[in-house]
Length: 251
Ligand SMILES: NC(=O)c1ccc[n+]([C@@H]2O[C@H](COP(=O)([O-])OP(=O)(O)OC[C@H]3O[C@@H](n4cnc5c(N)ncnc54)[C@H](OP(=O)(O)O)[C@@H]3O)[C@@H](O)[C@H]2O)c1
Image 1: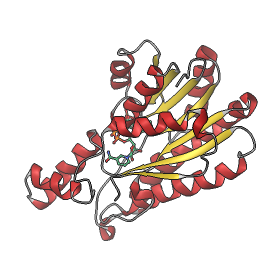
Image 2 (image 1 turned 135 degrees about the vertical axis):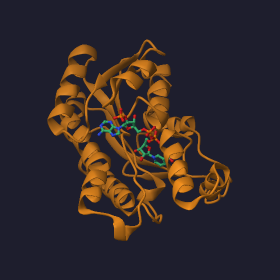
Image 3 (image 1 turned 135 degrees about the horizontal axis):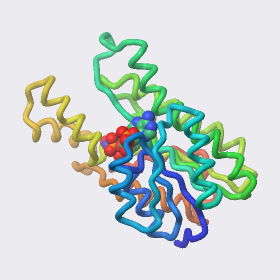
């Protein structure tokens, strides 16, 4: 597939799933702006490919996201592929969760997606072509214990995806969510650390508990999520709109 001449923005592109998606799009010929709060991981990922470009911004700040998009557009043309991948999960039993925990989870996972798509949509409309992709989660389609704020936020991302998809359906733009099960990334490592700390289980036992939910008995690789994102950017996927696509080995 050829994405040359297209400019993509991938939030959370400095690590894990976002870095894999950014590399896949750049390998397919797109210019890719990767976004996160920390400059260093972004610079390290960008150094690995001539078509990857780092820009620091916090996705929870609507003004910062709009400024980032304007700056990226000035340098590389209008971004027409918007991948809202930045996210975070904190685990805690519901009774210990505070309103601030809920706010924090909604801010990065839901508002971060809203901010990117809201500021970015006018350029897609002017181009008459666009791809909006959320990296939601299987937690956007089913519940998991001890991550209720994250599950609520990811369900909301799936709802936002389904609604916006209908609003832009006749404009050459598609809006879809990818819903991976447990993916082998730094976020997963942090989940394993939390389980070992809180339950006294070994690292292998904690990992086995997470993997057990996947009928294939394994973690998803970041590159497997990237493959789905790349396909959504293809012309073959033009009729795929408003979908929440599980990437979960059948979980
Ligand atoms: N790993 C899994 O098992 C799994 C499963 C399903 C879905 N997901 C989803 O996949 C996405 C990527 O996660 P990952 O596993 O690749 O985790 P990760 O390695 O921790 O990556 C998360 C990225 O988001 C960025 N980020 C976090 N808060 C941000 C903010 N306020 N503004 C801008 N960037 C921000 C981080 O960069 P900075 O810290 O530098 O800002 C980081 O690059 C997330 O949406 C996650 O919910 C992950």
